[in-house]
Length: 197
Image 1 (cartoon, rainbow, N blue to C red):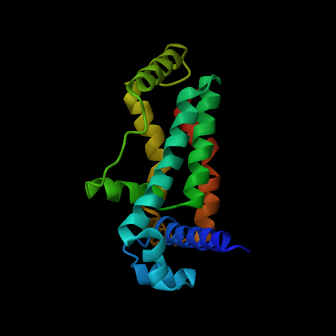
Image 2 (image 1 turned 120 degrees about the vertical axis):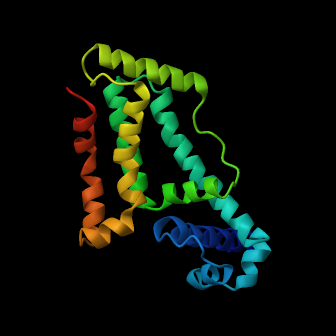
């Protein structure tokens, strides 16, 4: 293995470890030392490759944000029938929730800290989405309401369980494995709640 390949592998390992600590385990305050220990590398390597903990966090945050943005683009830019589009969006969101349970919570915590967050959705796309929702309401496929309420219903049903995961695990007395199973079963439940037919 060349020196460059080893360097790339180590950088990737550090990034994946940080992502795991932040988005999978929800340890947002993990220190450089904790990330290094978890990755099995020397702490100085993190500063060598990423200059600082904040820089490393910004890089994994940008990658996480890209995941969110790609998710939104599926729904905005596809020509599929509306319900199919929503079903795909729900499926993508649920699989991201299973992969990175604390991703949304982390993004919200970063916005609250005033860390730069670019909007995921273009205004024209949002207007088109509202029109599509209104059309579905006219056709009788969705309960009549303000289109934004439909979006809030969908987002709440998708995001809330993962956002309060530790609370649900404790109060509903379920294990991580059981929780993941419950999340993976939510697609049809959510679709049936959003659509009349």
